[in-house]
Image (tube, rainbow over all chains, first blue to last red; front, side):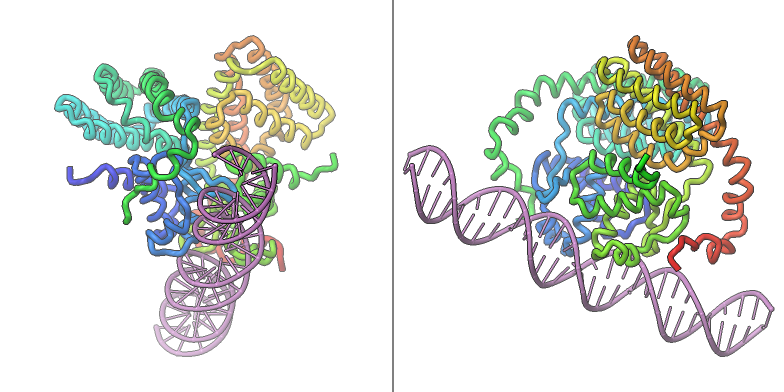
Length: 261
Length: 261
DNA sequence: CCTCCCGATTATGTCGACACTCAGAAAATT
DNA sequence: AATTTTCTGAGTGTCGACATAATCGGGAGG
């Protein structure tokens, strides 16, 4: 695994943005870099993304930087209040639930369409990914499992052969990617997740669209429940509340350290 | 009805864009105007949207114009090939089907959540809209029915109390708004659509989430079938196929006529 | 007569600059 | 000293300008 997590996030965002449009590479480049840092946690929620500093960093004018931020805002990773500095979006606990529920519904549709249209070759590839995920889980390779999961969902969405659905799903994936890593920490849930994935491929092979849809929905909703337990317990007390309560205390020093002296 | 269709489209787009972010008014202003013209058919699919002409027209620099086009591209109304002029997006028959299927799935989720969370007051408002739609249909007020339908779906999405779902739905609505008007031309389908809407409100009042979801899905898929018949018959022979078959032949003259001598 | 190539024209992507606005520090008042 | 007011620095939104790339039209060649 020569690739760092940041580079992998970067690749994922690149695929999402490139799928939509072959926009000039500079803007996409900037958007990918910033987006990857957000997903990787290098830019924590709420941190400033003022365009002049970013422009200095990327050695460009502010125009492409602004456009990149606008794109990332449409993807839900950045907030741009009018006449105020852009900042990393901070999805509250409620919004996380919304994202997962919508994602469950769309993955259900994807499963239905995949069960109809998927070819044998595509399914074999999916099966291979699941095998890799099992292997990673067995050896305790948490990152390996995580990225296998990401890749599985990427390929799975493609199986629907529905570009519109893929785009909508991609947008939600980017929003949820920040949280998904935490849902793996529970080993019991991880085992069930693997079983779900394996059975999902089987269901697709049998063209059983209802079972496939039910499985993906169950998997996503299970992840959401796990997340709610973690966030409800940990973040509501440790991370979300302090931002609200202490206010400026954390805005000053704690965050601005994203490493370019 | 003092409002023209263009103004109504403009208002719809304005609500969609303003919901996402309170972006500077100038960009949103331009995006609303161009978007409304696209939805209204004043800018036919494929017509040029070069930023210099638009900038002249709105008496601004090209910067806000470009940003507006980027936003409209994210909403699926505009295509911006790299280094090439932006143009009005042209959804083929296949993509229309995709949009409607995704929309059906998401409206299903919206119905499920609305059946749980909707208040009596909200449902009364929905009922009133349906009554207005019935009235419009009875008097043959095609436009009145169309805008009642739009408003119904706007309010209905809000009933889910799920902002993420609303945003995803909004994006799909903008894409489908161009076609929906055509699905009304069939009077038989119109009657069934009204019945579906009425029963949907009843189902929501009974908190019957399954029936509500089934009804909205049936309604959307019915609209899709009607569209496919129309487009499959008319457009596949007259408009879509020539683009594929003749190639560059139509790129020169046939489309470029969007009226500014 | 049609096709291909080449120059003039136009549009794009990017840049640096400007007025206006916002946030925080300094100063003045109670 | 605490609170309000002023003031200064920095950032945003917008503009006009430039280099580069794409498009349109005419001329050479088949």
